[in-house]
Image (spheres, one colour):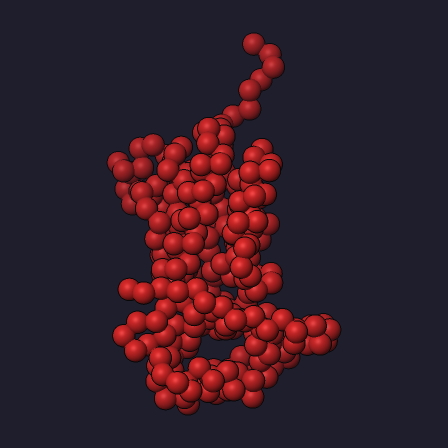
Amino acid sequence: MVNCQAETSLPASVPARQAEGFDMLLRVRVTLPDRPGTLGQVARTLGVSGADIVQVVVLERLGGRAVDDFTVVWPGAARVERLLAGLAVIPGVRVDGVWRAIGAPTTTGQDAELLAQVAANPVEGLATLVDAVPGLLAADWAVVAMVPVDWASRTGGGGATVGHASWRTPVPPKLPEVTPLRARAMTATDNDHFAVAPFGRAGLVLVVSREHSETLTPAAFHATEVDRLAQLVRASAVILGDRLDLVGAPPVSANP
């Protein structure tokens, strides 16, 4: 499979729309025929529907098909069904998901900047990573889960507990059955989507979630997004080193 992260940003159009005060940033994932003119047709349809495109990211091009992520400013008073109806009439186009994006569109160098922040303040490095990842992956929340050492002998591999959580994490968070083995995407029975990536020590796994709602249906995490998460986690593990072994450890008392 050939994956790519080519992106086109059009930031100049954002301020006028955001000034209205009720717009929201949406991510729209579309699978479309990889042929001349189709991408332009999708972009025109988004514009006619009322969406202001601020970024296009090509996630995949394979076998005559492409998977593209559009980040758009969408007027909050408009129904998303209007956007979906417009895309549905384009031959060969399939909408894989529409969901609310957190933070600004992804730009080149954000991953390196995040890792630099982790390295600059390793004491808060894990919390910095957890807080930043949802914005980078257009997700709702993220946590570092601690998988017990006897996870393999437990029914369903459960028992994970939360070490650090991002500010939008529900209490308690709905965690999938994670294991500390490999990075992967997961979808729960309620259609919530997860991406998980192990740190490679202390049974720690970073879990990122996109939650299904009554009005918006997010796309599952793409392979390129899982790879990106895994790279961030591996690099952070190298930077933080032995500090990861202290996550979730009880505080040391000053008294004997």
